Length: 333
Image 1: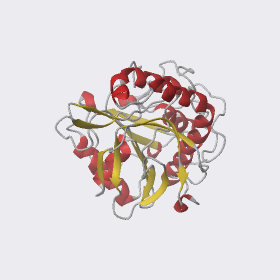
Image 2: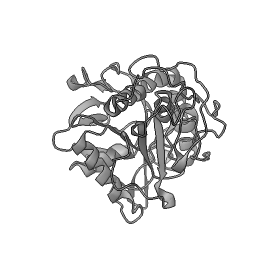
Image 3: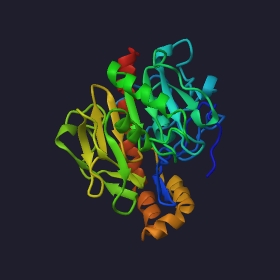
Image 4: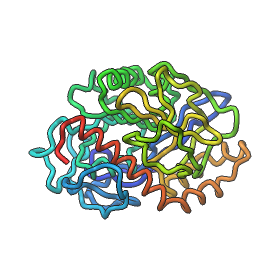
C-alpha cells in the first residue's frame, strides 16, 4: 500500500493491521498502517483534519470540521499552525511517535492529536532514524505497529530502545498509548506476553465489551458497551503485565484494552483505521485470509458500514488521550 511522506503537517487516512503468519513463523501486527499527512495540510485522505489550536480536547464529538494545518518540521513533526505555532505550543507539547514501517502511520489518531494542538515527532525507525535516549523533550509517547514481531530485535534493532522508552513512560507517568503491535510492545516490555492466536485471525469491525474498570477511565471511560472496533491481527496479548487493569474485552480476544500505572494505555484494535485502509490490508493479505477460512469482502464491508461510528467513538478516544497529554504537559486548553 502507498503512503505519503511523514515530514508533513496534516494527518489524513487511517491504519492498522494484524501480524502475518508465514512459513510457520508468527509476526506481530501491522497495526497503525495509514496514509501519512498531506504536504499541503489539506484534507488529503478520508477525514483529513488539523487543529485550530483553540479547542479543548477530551471526550466529545469526534467529527468536528477540519481546519488546515501548517508545514512539518524536523523528523516528521506535525505542527498545527492555526493559532498554535512555535511561539504558543511549548516544546513539552511534543508527542514522540515510534513508527516501525512505511505503511504504519498515525492515521486518525494523529489527526485528532494535532486537532488538540499537540505536535507529533514521528521517528521513522525502520529507516535508521534513532529513537531518543529518553523522554525528557516529549510530553507523550505513541507506539504504532508494523509487521515485525514485538520480540524480534534482529529484524527491528530499535525495539530495545522502544521498550526502554515504554518503561520510562510508565515509571514517570508520561502519557503512553500503544496501538496493536504497539500495545503488544507495551505488554511485553512490562512483563506480559504475546502469542500467536489459537484461532483464526480477528479481522473486520468487531464489537467490544466494557469491563468494570472502564468506568471513570479518562481515555476509554466513554466508550459505549458494544462499540465496534477495527480488528486485523494474528497475535494476541495472552498475559497482561503485573498490575495492568483490563478495560475492554471481546468474544474472541480477551485483552482488547488495558491500562498500566497512572497514564499508560494499550489497545489490540485499531482506532486509526477506516474502510479504505482495511480494503488495502485485505488485498495484501488475501491469501492468508482465505487460508484461515475467512471472507475478506465481508470483513471490509463491515468496516465501511461502521465507519461513521468508528470515527466518532475512536476520534473522541484519541482526543481524550490528547487531553491527558496536554494536562500532563501543562498546556492551556
